[in-house]
Image (cartoon, rainbow, N blue to C red; front, side, top):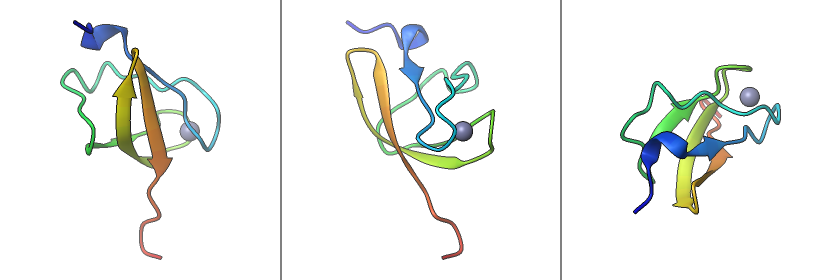
Length: 60
Ligand SMILES: [Zn+2]
């Protein structure tokens, strides 16, 4: 079983590691926000403790 608290996500925009402590129940399909650049990111997949995200273009 994966421990959600050990998940890591790297922002595709600024390449920083996103603080996931605000998202204790992170699941694929959720939208999160990068705490570094403020980019809105969609969680595509969570695999081996790594959160795969893509940038959500809002208002485009
Ligand atoms: Zn970022």
